[in-house]
Structures are given as C-alpha cells and as structure tokens.
Amino acid sequence: MKKQPIVSRVLLGWAAAAVVSSALPVALQGAESRPVADDIKQRIVDLPLRGYRVWPSQPPKDCPFEPSKELAGILFTGVHSDYRCGDTFYPSWASDGNLYSPWTDGTTDGVRSSSGGEKATTGNAVMIGDDPLALQIKNTSPPQPASPKPYQGRYPAGSLVYNGVWYYGTYCLGPSASVKHEGFTYNWPVLGPMPGFRISTDYGKTWTASPLSPENPLFPEPAKFMGPVKMGAPHFVDFGKNMEHSPDGKAYLLGMGAEENDPKPRYANLSWISADQIYLARVAPSPQTINDIKAYEFFAGHDAAGNPLWTGDFTKIKPLLDWNNNMGCATATYVPGLKKYLMCVTDGWPTCAKMNSYILEADRLTGPWRLVVYMKDFGEQAYFLNFPSKFISPDGKTLWLCYSANFAPDWNGQKLRIDPPGGRYGLCLHEVRLLSPGETVEQKPNPFASPENIARNAKAEANSAHPGYRAEGAIDGQAGGYPGEISEEWASHGGRAGASLTLSWEKPQSVSRLLLVDRPNRLDQITGATIQFSDGSEIEIAEPLPDDGTKALEIAFAPKTVTSLTVKVTKVKESTLNIGISEIAVFGPKDR
Figure 1 (cartoon, rainbow, N blue to C red):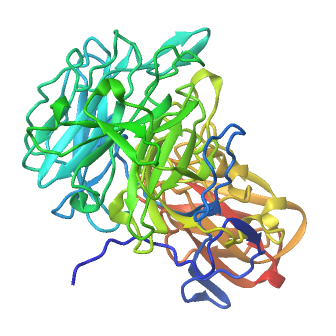
Figure 2 (cartoon, rainbow, N blue to C red; figure 1 turned 180 degrees about the vertical axis):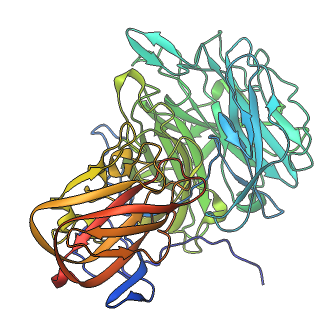
C-alpha cells in the first residue's frame, strides 16, 4: 500500500472555525501517574500547544480582493518543526517521492551558503521523509557559485524537479545588503534580473551552469541597470508530485514586479520582498526550453469573455494581480482536495521591519483571486511563504506552511518578536488548517494563565540569570522561551547542576500540585532536581523534564502549607550551557 505523507499532528475533535470561543481549564491529559513516595505521584502531561489560534484577518481598506466565500481564515495548530537550517526553502515534490529545495544564507547539513557578494553561492538539498516534523535534510552537492555582477547578490528563485531533471533558478539583487537612505537602513532595496536556470539530471549531485548571466538574463529586463523588472524572483507553481496537476503539462512561474513611471513611487519599491504587481509565465519544461525565452508564453490579460490571453511577446505581458505598494514575493500551490489554487503573497516593505502576508484562493490560476486571510505582522517578519504540496491532507484543509522569519530582528531600533511561536531565521514548517465560513474553534485553556495558579502571585528569585533573562519569566503564564520569546522563560548564566529558582509568598499558601516545563531549546535540559519546601520537606523529580518544552512534569502530593519552594537542579543533559525553566505552576488542593 502506498504510504501517505503525515499531514496532521493534532486531532481536532471539534469544528475548526473562524470564531474563537474560550473555555477555562482544568484537567490536563497525560500519562499514567507514577508513585514516588507516600501520596506523591509524578507524570508527564501534555500542554495546550503554544501558538494554537486563529490568525485575525486585517486587510487594509484599499484591499482589491473580495473575500472568499468558501474559505474564511486560517488556524495555526501550534505544531511546528524544529530544524536548524538556512532559509529560502521552496520544496519541489519529485517523482522519486522526495522533496528537493534550494536554500541559502545559513548552514544546512553542516555546510554554509551565502548569496551576497562577489562569491555568492546557492545551496541545494533533498528533504527525505513523509513526516514534516522528521525530515532528513541533506545537501545533494556543495552550494553552487554564480556571479551576481554587476549586481551584488544572487539568490535562489524558482526551483522545479520534473521527470528527474532539477531546474534551479536564481535572481539578482542590489545595490547592497545594507543601504542607508534618509536615516533608515534597507536590505537589498533593488530587485534585479533573472539569469536563467542551472540544471541537474541526477537529483542535484552534479550541475550544468545556466548559459545566461545577469547581463544577459532570461527575460529582457530591466530596461536599464537597477531599473524595474516584471518577472522578478519568479517561483514555480506547485502542481504536486512531478507536476501531476498541471492543467496542460506546462510549468507556470509567478514573478513579482513593478512598472516604469510608477504612480506611487517610494524608495525600495521593488526590492527582494516588496513589489506592485504579480506576473505569470509558462513553459513546457525541458533542458532545451527552460533557458530559451522563445519557448515561453506570458499572461496578457483577459478577453471580453473573461478567458485568459497568452502571448510570446514579452512586451505585451500584463499583471495577473495589481495592488500598488502592497505586493511582494508570491508562490502558489494547487490543492486537489479543494480543486483550488492557494497563493501566498508577502508585502515586506520597507524590507527589514514587520511584514504582512496574505493568502488568496482561486479556481483557476488566471483568477479571479479572492482573499482568505490578511495576516498583519505575521512572523513578525516572515517571508518566502509557500505550501509544499506533499503535506496537504486529502480534503485540502490541513496544510503545512513553509517560511523563514526575523532575519533582521533589531534593525533600525525596532525589536521584533517571534510570532507565531516556533518561527526562526531559517526553515520553518507550521501546521495550519483552513477554515470554512461560520465554523468555530474551541480555544484550548492555558493552565499557567489560570487564576488558580498561585505561582503568578509569588516573588521569583534565581541564583543567577543570563543577560536578558529574568527569574520572573518562569511565572509569567507562558511556557515559552528561546528560540522564541526569551522573556517567557528563566535561563541561568552558565548554570548547570546547582542552579536554583525560588518562589516565595508573603502569606502561607496551601499547595499540592506543581507543573514544571523545561526550556524549549534542545541543548539545555533538567534531568534531575529536588523541590525543597519551606516546611523542610523535599521531593525529588522522578524523571527528566521533557526536552522540547511541549510537555510538563506534573507532581501531585499531600497538601502542604508553605511560604516558599525552591527548585534546585541536580543533574543536566551533557550539552547544557544555561540551565533554566520555561514555566512553573503551583496549585492548591482544591485544584488537584
């Protein structure tokens, strides 16, 4: 039997929806209790997933897209990957069952690539596996060099594996990765030409360089150096495994662009992540055609009956979508279960601040396109969004959103958060669910934010704290922390065994249950600790705290009346650098 990709890690036992209802806790589901001493029971319990929420749709008033009548929003389940890779991943599902993707600006599989400067390189990786949370990501060959001159950057663009041939495109950027203009620092403010595709016939082990160059690009643009382009940073439409859902056997490319004589000019208008329009081209892919503009057709608008027009004359290309000063990087995926296309667009102007992304849907690639959700400040700086077709559920409602985030978390004095939790500068995969009109989503309760959690009323003190961290982070009601929001955890300053955290109250408190959550990073882990109470009693934890911060160790015991408790670390994971606690909750006997 053909093995199907795993597309869901969360069983939604209620109707997913665009309206959020709330319900307070109280019980957590978990493993069987483990007796440790008289009336002391310890067990690992599941926690409500951080980031589980419906993302609000907040389109600007001048949004030109009508709301979708069939899809009313997007639910983030809180399930996400934890890979340590570079960014710029655009997976293509090949006939051998694997995903193949470009990448750059970071380290993947122990190898580094950077696409800026005269020695720019672009990486190539295979993503093996059917579970988006357990992929083996390996380089197929070393990152490939290609000169950006006379520009200064050359980054991955459209990537397609079809009939065993990998077509890997790049695009140029300028004038520099950091440009100061009127007191503001911009990142790659000029989008340049597309110098064709390099080709591999052995799944990326060896490559034939593109015969084209930045000075002799695939599309005849720009008209002048550093001028606007239309088919900028083009990306292949994802038609599924080996393009199985292409309507005509052709590959389609979405480009972002702008026109000469822009009626709404601004600095960095057409940058690496901002644009005015989206354009569309198509080609029957082969090693002979992919770098030959004569083999391409370009979308040229619609006729009077609404049918799409195509032309081989690049000068007659027309926008597929037009929203001046509100467009940018665009990708699209066909969803068989819905018989629809989904398009992700990121408006990232002014290139290194908060970014807005939105999702559109259409029955045909040529439109009309309708708005599913407008995600203001998504990431808060997310870019290169795409839906890999391999990880779409049969009904088309559950997908995995691929993106990168927060490459510039503190440029120009603006501090950015990771939102949703689990994002990072590098490959991110988040499980999402598309919502139908009128559906409701039951909000999962957060036990740490419950008024019954008396840790919230305590004074927190630690015997050390890493710069930027505070003991209070362990009682803030959020089980978070690095690589997300560091204010949501306590981390010691180089502490290992011997590190401690004390909670104290002004008045005696009756306590009978604790929840302990480890830091969410995978380097630091408490494997042994004692809980010391002000009445002189002590409890030793029975097992290590779960290492990823998504579960808690629950300790239940006979009620005690105390004014303080101290968690003293006795053993840690070998790789630990700065031991700490993401969150601790304390409950009385009535909540046991």
